[in-house]
Length: 311
Image 1 (spheres, rainbow, N blue to C red):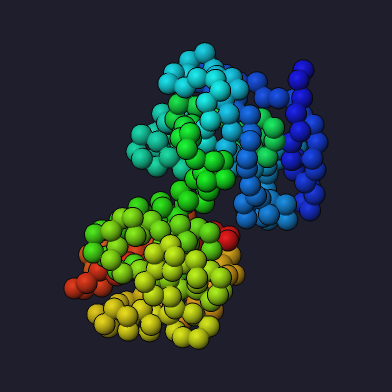
Image 2: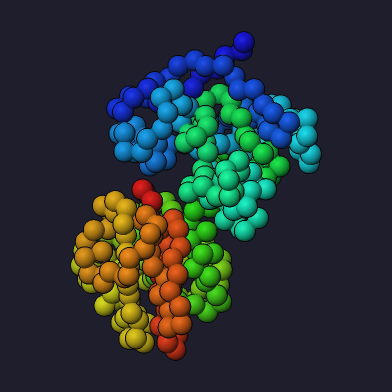
């Protein structure tokens, strides 16, 4: 049986480069030859034993590559095309997917739902830090890479960029909104860019690292608040002319990067989802995941998103 190199989880504290068989694919799958991938903060949690995965699993969930082989039922793609696949790889046909909750995909479960079920690479199936990866349900999860873009230019799309943009989508940013983005790591920077693309007219970033502050301005931030020098809540109030901004936040997961900022933010009501921000409005309160929320004030809308992921 043909074999390949792969980064394999051995035990907490140890990931080894070893050989394992090249994956077999089913009728709806694709075999992708990996040309570029990267390491996520989640992979570090797996290495440290902070997130449990099966021993022998190939880690990684950010693939860029070339279609090596297609399942017999896959349409719309052909071998040799450059593609990416999302870190979240839902089936597209479970009850959760049909309800628009692709990250909770539980195809094969009794009710079609499973917490974090859409995240499969390096979690429940072999991931992409390898020479080849099997992409399940290829028609739902592959995206073609335009010829004019390099691997490096699209590398953030499978996870980092899509997480940042989905935060702004979950926040339902509208044209003319004022947006505050807490943390300007890679995902936070993508949230800043996403807010601008969705029509926000004023973007306030909260960050303390000089290099990130500089990049944040280039990505669209109009104002950057250094939370080590000023209370970000008071600064947001000042920058929005004190229009009654009521900032509330909750983080049940491990939030080390912005503990100083969290201490000045009043906790919201309990939320069942880890590392989430509560969405507060005058008429309703809902939660969004992973790690995003909105803060609204009257009469002018002020929305805030916080990076709930490592980075």
